[in-house]
Length: 323
Image 1 (cartoon, rainbow, N blue to C red):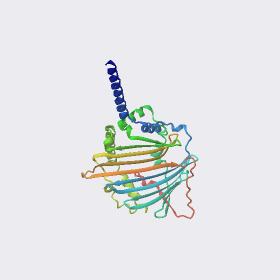
Image 2: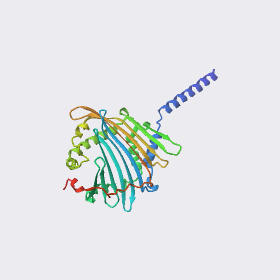
Image 3: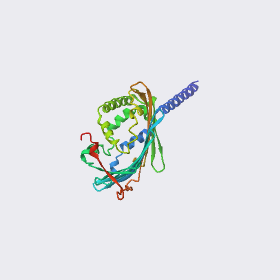
Image 4: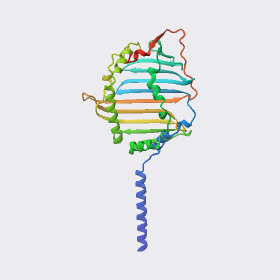
């Protein structure tokens, strides 16, 4: 009888251990994808070889209530040239069915050329000095923001913000050591801290737009160029409604491909937001974008040759709201 009781106790203990193990396994978070994502943010990219040139390709689109408002594709080649940089790039976009194509060239000696490929017009931008580029240069000179790995305090904040979303990250490892990290978040999964941040960002954006009337003044100057003619009749505020009430993130998806050294090679993103405008009309806005990097330290920007072309001077000062 005692032997039988021991067997029952052993079986009960084994059953309890089995149930506990299965339960623990079922509810243990799978953080492999999130850990891979953080590894990219924590990587010390300054320890690698300096990037002197590269090619960047990207695309972006905005859809409102199922209708494509904006679609853009672009590519840029960047390379060092003495103390400056050579840059060449192409931009093609379609806004409410109207297509425009442009190119930019900068040869590192403060000469900048713009080409309106839609109308075959060529411009050299003059007076593009520190007064007009100061904000960009000040930002780019902030060393604390350049190629710095995430510190422990920032990691703790990220962990707090992500919360239970760690399970929404996944990673696919490739034979060459590269990996694709994906995070896919639906409306129901978004934690409260992120919702509060979204509300704060939305309020700040409304305040910022209310205090920047100079943007409209600069648009009045720009629309005089043939490149923008035909676009001035588009009511962007009507096509891109400002959501002011019941704003909610419906879906977020981010996919990032990195190499064996955790250097980002490509990024794809998707954000879908719903809400109501000031008139109480509901809208759904979807933004999608992607970008990839190639030709690292093996890219030569294209040079602009003004020979045989009719080049018009374009004064950057005309777009200065202080003039």
